[in-house]
Length: 153
Image (cartoon, rainbow, N blue to C red; front, side, top):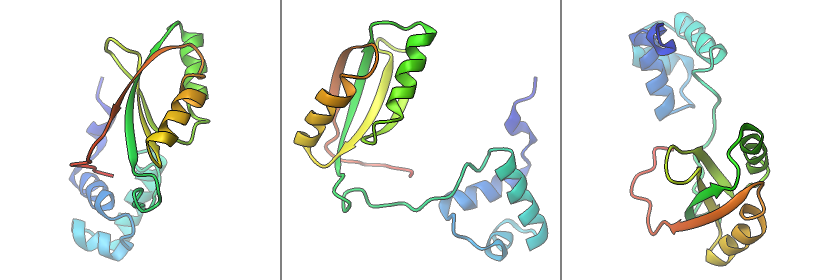
């Protein structure tokens, strides 16, 4: 069975690469970058959006300047990993703004969270009042990031 990305040609990939680097490119600028005219580029972008390859557009915000410079990674072990418990945890995570990312893991723990707060005191409050209160949380382990060396987003 072919993979969905097998249907992308070199122009589609070039469009995705260019928009990943600068989502504010005009269609004319994008067309010039990928070597097509504006009309086919517009049609390809619309198709890539409709097919879910482009999920949206956003600004890259300096989170440090916004007062959200503290980053912690949290390993979470659940007390129950049956489907209903996983679904409950997944839904509840969506309601915690400080949780920037949540990944289900194939590891000795169940989830890895990226949590962004103002400082360690704010993180401690989020951990105690929000993360520990998520459905089926049995144990957490925190790892505080000292510096971001690479961030694609």
